[in-house]
Image (cartoon, helix red, strand yellow):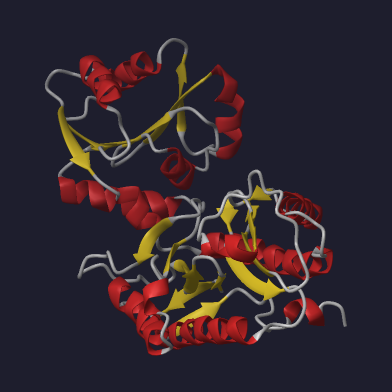
Length: 368
């Protein structure tokens, strides 16, 4: 059975719930997930018995290689014209579509080319919810991506020296990831030095801040393998950690350990976040943890489930989802500490994928 067969079966079950006899997929990540097709343009039309992909000349051969079990509908003019031709052949009565992905203008063009009797059924996050549960082929890619990320961090620690800038170090880390075999980086690498570490999503641009002896360095990065992303954060000191850094670091590490002990499949997303928040509050740092505990990772670096105080009461963590766990403390004018692991959520707990050191003196240890 092909890897996408069970994904299409799950989507068809959702179609039945909506009473739809066709599902139009426009989201690029969902298009890849359900078909295997990685091209930048196209649509999928899924019916109870058939699976079609519409794309243009650039991708005809690619579709045949990546999605051989899909019927290729060749786009020679505008995309909506090709869609209209296919809908005329299929004649669906109720067409489900990704309302959270489509612009108003695109939807109007689709309606114009569809059979007048067709009813359009808006859906939200269908693909994203199905993608939250990873199959074994996805887990294998995520394990590989995180293993490369771990290895890159060990090499990176040796690269960090006084005088090197944030921008220089971010580029060097990207080179290391590529040298180790990553297809790409998961996102723009964050290297935040000193008080810049107080900015959770610091952008190292101009990034000319140079490392000095005694500086803390927060690095957030990941390898991408086969379209799947790793995500990891480590914070360390260039030299001996002082008392303040040690206090904050221990608080973050304690929160992470509490979460990794508590989280399991079926747990409320809000409750998972609350575990970390309560731990940091007990250490006196609750007001300095302003973002969510974590998020799902897969074809997108931020996807379901969202482990957040903003989650709804009925949002739970599904088994075989892959999530980040990233408590942090950020103090303006001083800096910040974030420690982030990637983990598979199992029925009885977590399988933590991240193996990179969490030693508070990691920089010193890297030097023997």
